[in-house]
Image 1 (cartoon, rainbow, N blue to C red):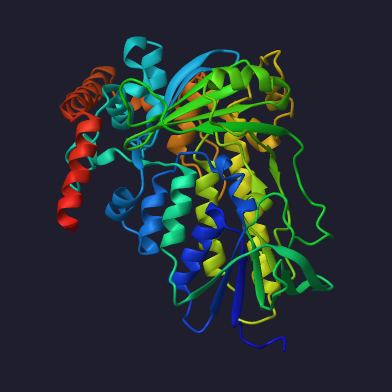
Image 2: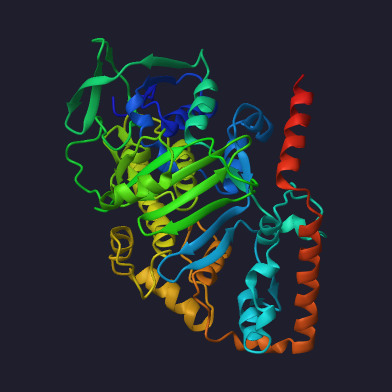
Length: 492
């Protein structure tokens, strides 16, 4: 029986993680593997913590599963995103745009930030990184256009993700499931049968018993299928969140805005025909946070941040927020969901003996979430901490050796410390370091090989080309409305 082939997979959960996972398996696994989706509303409650932002990797992730951007735009409220504008962030009140951008130029073998550090010592007015990032300048101008293939234009270096509503995507991916391939059961689990660490069957609330070879539990933090022996959760901090759609605002932007406050932070995300508001706060600051949220049609949710170290035990994989919960401050929650799904597809067990696949999945899962946690915590690693509960809790954990090395090496000499297979790029880290006010004290001496007049001319040309291109872009609203109309006309 240990070498018998896999025939049946059960996915338990009706939230975003469960639907996207079911769609991905539906479209990639061999047709002789049966898929059963047990849909429960419990999984939908914490989807708010996936946030409203994806990274540029989502385009390829969806296309690989045969989901196209035109179909996504036509059937959801999804919009484009050039990144996040942070306002008044942290005790030091930093303001910057954490944009999506392709690799910064390397001149004569020296990374770009070293030349900016050199400029900062001679002509500081020309040393702002944002002036040399087309995504940031486009965001500031409020313009957008899809990057062309022509590498001669600065627009080719712009990258974009998506701004979305978790509830909207729930419905989209639920509707994309094959009615022939996937058996869908509107029910809940009342009893889990086990033999050691192996799940042998599930009893539903209609007394139906479900048997399978492999179980994926995407039901959320209060997982019923998770092994009772798993006590490996790392993390104790709790946060709450409330969301509301259709917020009345002024101009709609091709970026998400995050504004810091004493209670935590609030984001506004432009979708196609609505704006989504998300307020994140410490449980001890609920009254102030909900007052700031400002709309009556919301339901607050709470989650414990952290992760399990063993999401796959026996023949059951805990997936989504049952395995890990990250603060939706960046695109990290969706980046890691994509990685989890791709890893699962790569390591889907070929038999009932899952030892090798289980060990590799758990190893890579822990690496991914540890690296993402470094990036998230870098938003709070300042020498000052606020007196309010959210900021105290977010800043209270001492820096890990890895994060300390990243911060110290960049501040000391502009070096970007990177670890294998990090979900966030060197550009992500460069923009974050500088946005948080971490400026290198010195630069690579090799940067002096370029004459100052030559460097000045080179960077001035780059600044000018980006500035001209950003101003030529059509307004975001106009571009998107025309694109949607064009796609609708093509579908007639």
